Image (cartoon, rainbow, N blue to C red; front, side, top):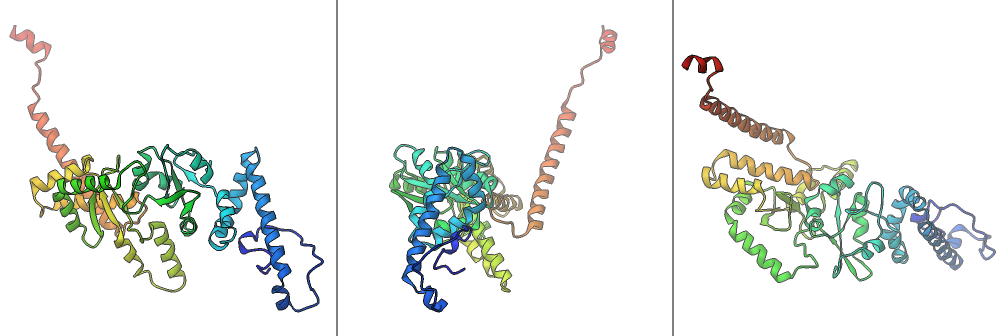
Length: 360
């Protein structure tokens, strides 16, 4: 079981090696340094990759799907550990994407083939599963423009993708990072547009930064969000929520404390969609009720909580979150009761047929 014959990422392969060139009458230590082993290693890796390519090229796609579901993790480890064969392994990787359905996968080659005209980047988002990736506001920013988004749904994916910053001529881009630049936009125009949005909605931006002090690094307005009111994105060197949970679990498992692990959470940037009804409602609350009122404060923190949940983060204080929800529900219910009472007093009861007859 030494890696001089087969690398760790191919340990699922079973077979027999027949060679007349190995000096078997020497110690294991000397044997492991033999040049013959290096040649055998290269040939076995090449044969294994050829075998995997044959499965991938089979007309029956279910065969490779079965292979990927069972051994896909090993290929991801190969991308991380085997720099010599990385370029041969990457085309064999498979991903869920915004254009695949059910248990279908896509490859980087297929992604490149389906790209929009003029597209030069491969977009991806990390999440704890396909369904959560679909709900990600970060993915929405790209999906709404007609771009396909790859879903990386395991902690291992995020480590692996750091080794694949480019595929052929295409750069791989994490859409959950701050400063996303789309292929169909001019960099200067994008910056100018964001500056205008931040200036036009300065009141709500400043209010959110004050109300969420210690929770977010900063608040910025964006027009990339189409359906969600807000999204949490990481700075260029921040960890995704999936990786944060993985690192925290590793730290606790090794006997450490998770107390310092949430520092990376504070690197998050809150991107806000100023055209969304919820954000407009918050702006109106600030203007009419003042910045010291309790309702806009609860509204602002709830906006952050929802953005955190949909972006894949965990709510730090679930009890406080539930209290804010109940408070809003109570306010809404009291308002509906008052409206119903007013309507009831203003209803003019029409006289019955009997009363009409008596009047005649």
